Every structure is written in structure tokens, then in C-alpha cells.
Image (cartoon, rainbow, N blue to C red):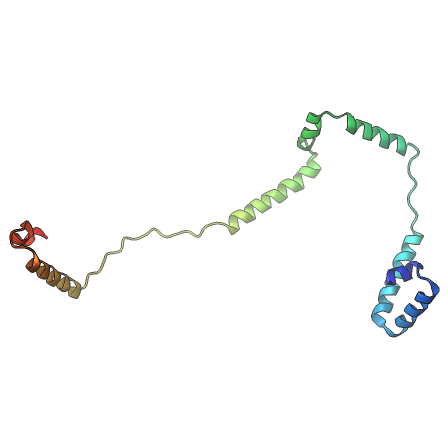
Length: 151
């Protein structure tokens, strides 16, 4: 409604009601003033004059686009680009690549050292006791029962 008010498109009754609101509301009053400034600037702006042969050049360019073969349309994006345009694109791509390499570089991992397994004396003693108990339960005629070093 404030945009329509600034553009002068409101009827007298609605504009009067809005002006009554603007008298008591500083936020809406500020917005209405900004919109009025925009409309005044647009009213003061004059479009530059176009050249006399603008239409002829436009229609010729449209005709040239229509005459292009499908292959020319496809390869147009890959035509050489002037250095003025290619240099910033190349620099940007290089910076993005470097940033990606720096940010996603894995942390160096130290070589794994073989860990010596520590065996406590109680473990060895318990294991030997268990083996001795198992030998007692082995059948007398089996090969394991006859040789103590079979296990």
C-alpha cells in the first residue's frame, strides 16, 4: 500500500486514511519517504536515445542466431575466450583448487609400531593350570593323553 501511495495510485479516501496512519507511525513514514524518493528518481531519469539502426542490427543478429547449425550452437561455449575474461576465471579456479587441497588434506599418520603383547605371570600360570586340567579329562587311549607335549 505504501508503494502505491508513493506512486500516486491510491484513491483519495485510502490515501487520506494512510496519511492519518503516517502521521503517527515513524517507521511507515520513513518507508513512504524512501519510496517517494525512488519514484521521483525514476520520473527524472531519461532513457538514452537508441541509435537509428538499432532495429536493423537487432534483426540481423537474430537472423544470424537462427542460421547457426546445431554443431555451431553446441561448440559456441568452447570457443576461445579473450584473455581479459579467462584470467580471472582461471585464477578463481586455481584458488578454489588450492583451498580444497589445503582444507581436505589428510593429517599425516605416524607409522604403526608393532606393539609387544604384554603377558602377565598370572595369565601364564592360569593357562598352564587349565591345560593340566584338560589333560586329566582326556581319554586314556588317545594320543593326547599319552604325550604331555601334545597340546
